[in-house]
Image 1 (tube, one colour):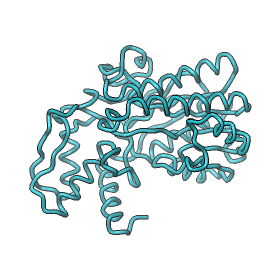
Image 2: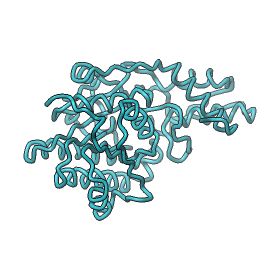
Image 3: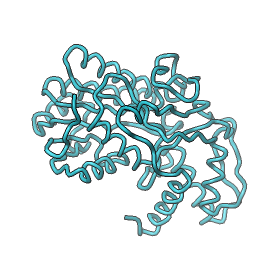
Length: 318
């Protein structure tokens, strides 16, 4: 299948008002796309089949980019395993079925790095995704998302649905979720360090041992990769989106503390889980199949994110 010209397509973006969704829409608009519909939760509860049917009937999209998810960090996953499994599975399964029934030209399912087995060899290669059980604290979420990969592949085989599946690594950036109950590691650490400086605190507490490693992709890079794949990729195999840079949580905390001007003590709470021991992706497929490589340097991206968060506290962020 040749590249899709997105400019003349009716595109529906679920989760388009969220952290990643806003950036995807910016990149679509930069491509000249003008017929973009953002499916917002207050109008369409995508866990409900009736709302999904109404979305397709009302919008009549030609392309669906499914970004909506119920998601959080390790703590939120431990508290909400049932909800994270059910809501994410039902949203995706019903949207993919709706895409089939309504002859959608292309469906983009964004998955999660949490779907990989707990002890996947680093760097994670897409063919390793079925070689074990995910890390326990986020397994329900990861398995729900992985089931949607099976559905995309099965629907392509049986019904000819042009559905693709992307696996972005941990995202961060300006406008991230800084709610301590549901935020991921980078915004949670930024919030702790900035507040510690403001309150002249002598220490901060951080979950785990700091030995776990992660790879982080700036949200602008992730959005660019998703739009590139929407234009250029037409295949059944999942594709990683990453930055090719593995860093320990201990090192990450040091960088964030430095950039936030926090000079106090960092106390590690080893009674709390580290999560998956290591995360870093092989991004060969994305580069070869649709020309994606990350561009935002981690330290520069962290600096921008910290500055944005500080400005937001002052009421000055865009």
